[in-house]
Length: 523
Ligand code: 1PR
Image (cartoon, rainbow, N blue to C red; front, side, top):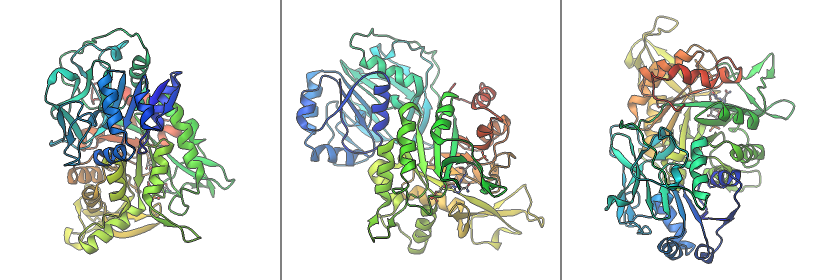
């Protein structure tokens, strides 16, 4: 039996699912005494350092945790569950951590995108039971803006390279903690968990050739989900956002089954977009929560969910915060939420007043769950102009002239699934969202969506150069070459596709085989 510390934030369901998939039983810690009597403890920290420590404090878990750690019984900390072991974090100045390891948690100070999101490798520094069965070249899923800096290097189990060499896991006796997420790292991650769960495993030291670890470019499968005219929840796919063919909503199958297929085929991440979320209220749209619960039972890569994440007042006048909606999604198995229409309205307000309110969905969700949990989904469309000063927006010079030979364009943001254009450009939107706390940009393009013509490289380049958070290139993938093109010619960290995967025109494995040797990927 594994005691499991759920302090009420973030997606802990995936860790429980991963452990249970290995045949182990999980008992959720309900009281401080449960920590003291545990024989094995798993602590999957998710969210932001300050709110995590506050929650642990409110639940009177801090002292029992220190006592448990000092007893030397087996402990596995994940992500914030590693950072919590330290004395404090730059993320929450003045908030004291558990102090089990001397040292602090620092924010990445790099020219690269932060958060560090994606699949990266390990430089193994000492033998450990968790490495049984490893070759040394495996990649694991990371998502964090902060990394631990111990005073003493003795605890370091692995390091990882991302602009600098940072500590990606520690081990002191039976206390093991990883910055990466084993529960989100496919079969390699499950093996780490399995090794930890075994009581008498051998200590192993897999050898990697002495080169730096490299962050892989991610291939993301996207499932646009909506209810069709028969009332079934289906995966659909539009052409330039029109999902109907001869008046009927296209149906590519059931979301849970398709997500499982893409996981097995090697997708590095799965995104679900509830494309009619802008008109329904997701907490009443329970099927999406159920889709997440079911998917997270056997899909062990990150799951993003979008659609309808905004404040909402129901017909009885009850107000719901976007944060509540997001919390429900995280509890059901989502790792990130993506915000579309609401982000546009928030940025418009920001540009009107010159500041954030502190109460917007982007600010509130990132404060509680961390920046990495907030993705901004942008649905832009090109607006051509003859000269840069013809529009008061961020205009780019284009090599694809407009219908009247225009040599410039700006990218107009839309809301409600592309139905309504707004007086705001995609580059400004991305920049303001980053300031407000967003951790990643999902950059669609209505003009390219479903066309198979390739990604809009000019759009992706312009946005990725304008922000320092990772950008997911989306819309238009039609051939394997398009993925290489987007990675070699823009700053995109990942590429998302839908139609070619749904129609089985280009399987994920074919994309990866083509990229192998050209671009760092997870095989
Ligand atoms: O505005 O916060 O409620 O979120 C709604 C979400 O639903 C947004 O993320 C928005 O992008 C999405 N959405 C709304 N309507 C549609 C539609 O298609 N009618 N889908 C829609 C967006 C675009 C991509 C697509 C790529 C790749 N789908 O996600 O998967 O373009 O497609 P391809 O590879 O086939 O070209 P809110």
